[in-house]
Image (cartoon, rainbow, N blue to C red; front, side, top):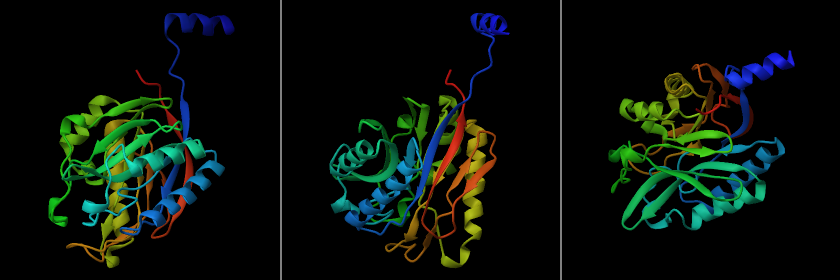
Length: 273
C-alpha cells in the first residue's frame, strides 16, 4: 500500500488533499461614530475567537465608524493609518488573521474598504468597495477601481475580499471567479426596515450561496448588528443572520437573527493550483 501511494505521488496522480481553516464569524454590534466602543466590541469578539482556536476572525462592513455614516468623512483615517494599525496590533495580540471593513480617508476621498491582516500584523490586502450605492450619503463614498478587486496568497490559501453590494454585480463576480480563490470573506452591512426581518435574511443567504457556487469556494458573509442613523435609510436595522456557505453553494451555518454572536466554524479548502 505504501509503495502504491509513493508511485502515485511520483506520477502526480494523488487526489488533492483537503485542508481546513477555522474562521470565527464575528457578528458584532456597531454604533455609528462610536470608535472606542466599536473597537472594544471587536476585541471582545477576538477573545472569543481565540478561545475557540480560530485561525481567522471575520468582521462586518464599516465596523468601526458605521456604514453610510457621513461623520466618517472627518473621522476616518488612511490605510495604513491609525485604525488599521489598531487592527494589526489586535491581530498580533490575539494571534489571529483578521478581515474587517474600515472606512478609509485618502486625501479628500472616503472609501468603504476592507482589509486582511495576518497574525504578525502585516497588511496582506485592501479592497475598496466598487458598488457604493451613492444615493445613500452626501457626499458619497468614492468607488474603488474594478481592476484592483483580487485575491492574495496566505498561509491558508488564496483569500479574497469583496464588500456587501459588490456581490450584486455580475462583472465583479466574474473577475473573482477567474482568480480562483480558496476562500472569500465578505463583510456586510445588510440593512432593511424593521418589519422586513427576518425575511430579509433569506435574501442574504441566497446571494452568498449563489456566489459561493460560482466561485467554487467557501464564502463567509459577516453581517453587523445595529441601526442606520443617517440618510434615506435612517432607522433601518442590520439584522445579523451572517451566513457561511461551502464551495457547492450549500449553507453550513446561519448566525442569530438580530443579536450579536461569535461562531467559529471549520471550513474545508482545496489546494491552490
